[in-house]
Amino acid sequence: MTEKVSLREKIGYGFGDAASSMFWKIFSIFLPIFYTDVFGISAAAVGTMLLVTRVWDTANDPIMGIISDRTKTRWGKFRPYLLWMAVPFGIIGVLMFSTPDFGYSGKMVYAYLTYTLMMMAYTAINVPYASLLGVMSANSNDRTSFASYRMVFAFAGSILVVAIYQPLVDWFKTSFSAASSYQFTMIVIGLLAICFFLLTFWWTRERIAPPKSQKNSLREDLKNLAGNIPWFILLGAGVATLIFNSVRDGVALYYFKYYVTDNAAFTFSATTITLSTAYLFIGQTTNMLGVIMAQPVSKQLGKRKTFMFAMFAAAALSALFYGVQRESIAIIFILQALISFCAGIIFPLLWSMYADAADYSQWKTGRRATGLVFSASSMSQKLGWTIGGSITLWFLALYGFEANMEQSPQTILGIKYMMSFIPGAAALISGLVIMFYQLSDKKMAEIMADLDQRRANEN
Image 1 (cartoon, rainbow, N blue to C red):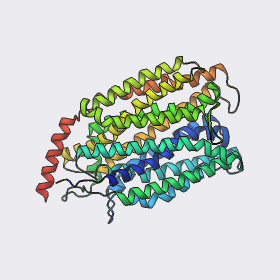
Image 2 (spheres, rainbow, N blue to C red):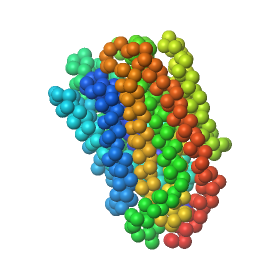
Image 3 (cartoon, rainbow, N blue to C red):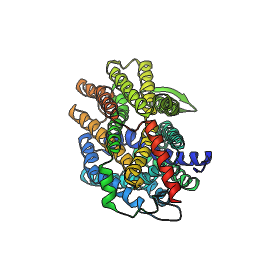
Image 4 (tube, rainbow, N blue to C red):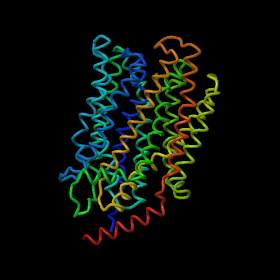
């Protein structure tokens, strides 16, 4: 019989992605322009750095999945990493936004080192965190609920960071240099992230263990993963989805600074809220509305169809962005809201489907390797973000971008492409890939019933 999960546990699980998403949104939106306009590295060099460092990091995700699958502590397999890695995660985030007084070559070495360490820390805490979804409950509805809470808190964390990041930087600038202002802002956000990860550790529990007869065999786990077709489909759809998101996020500040010519949207308690901050805030808010709608919509249409239709809609709406003029602020905001709503719907489904893929693998092979299967989530997230981030920066360089200068018509054209057709194409690919996903809700109900019977027989 499945143990009932509490509201506190769902909230606790959500806090983990609030922490991760605060940092991830910073990586997607603020890190590129920090590197080019504050740290002083060329756009092409940053794009190359993102891709080169990913060679190691892509392999690092399944390695972490394998390690966490074989971890045995009194807290379980996955929860301990939330305790062990929370503080290093926060500290490295601060170091990544620090600006040492080095020459250009020294800055490049520093950027490579801190970025690589940050991604390793992200992997070490987020692969186990994602894997928790597969072991907290065997109930499919509970999992979708956990995934929905996770996504609500993820977007709440993103909303928080887009609302406070630039105002904090601007506030610190009144007393410190621009470089120090970014560092102090990251200290504030890093402390919040540490607290959130520790709450996840304290408030969650692991309930599902591998079959008692299962023996550790990396060869068997890798062999089973190679035959897990739903896993590969989710990997492809996840990469395309993150390219879609990361290109739109990565170019947003450039779009407002150099095309819209960003200015104050309104002032609140002597704090200026820019158009770009309002744009990002609207996006995260409607993202969260999409997350809330994911469960009721998918109950009617099924996970696959909901995912597919949302991505097709996002692709069409993104293409419309190309024709929007810089003065049409209302249209820019409306399109941002609609696209973000579509993107929000798919993320709880994606995480829930990863859990389904882990169950499918156990049902098919008799072995469970939750961490290895869920490493696809972290791998696709970082791979998609890296490809999208590299595309953004390479396109900026290709179209002649020069930091803190008035941009040429050719550069503006490239920025508009990255707000419209390029992310739209990625969303279209994601929708097409997910069409091949065969684990319907009905099929998963049959699989779960069979697995429940096997567990009962073991006991």
